[in-house]
Length: 257
Image 1 (cartoon, rainbow, N blue to C red):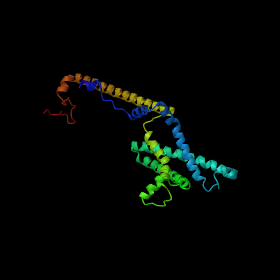
Image 2: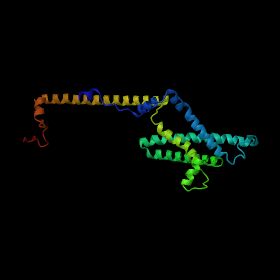
Image 3: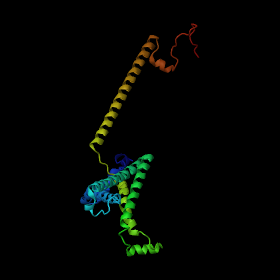
Image 4: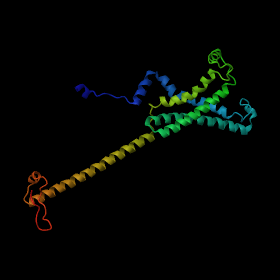
């Protein structure tokens, strides 16, 4: 019993569990994951989506000298839009997982729907680009023969590569929920809420003090009234509610039981 009181059970919060898992990896691996790999993921998705949006805009994406200045501006904007779409998809992933954990179902479903749409477009862009150049490997042929899909226009390798980047964005939202970065704005907001809570407690304490003071004044007045009637406060307490009452309108006092 004493052991339970002196050493209460320690519940590790989610952030601590994330930090403990991160310490298993070498520091340089954590540094690369947190500072470089996410950037490469966004750049790869931006490249893929930008290539999809330039289809039909220029005749040959590998011949920029034939584009002209107008189409060149369009290509640059399309790749910038691809980077934006990749960033929005990643933000939807993180926001939807956080909303599901907080049980904010409407916000969670809305962000998850956006994630599904962006991921579907990215998968289609990858399939469109790779299916034209990638030939089936012996492993692809074996899988297609086992599934009786001879002459399929796409191979399992193309499908696997196409879903790789979208799934990386989806699971990034799950894996990063333990990581909390507190900005200066978050710190200021937390301090503001703390100050508001302290002010509310102070006002509540002052109100309680005023109530207690009013009650004390009422008790003193009651004691003075009882002394004037010749009854001590202890006798009034023993009598319960049988406190001397004022005469009735007909001049007769209340009958004692």
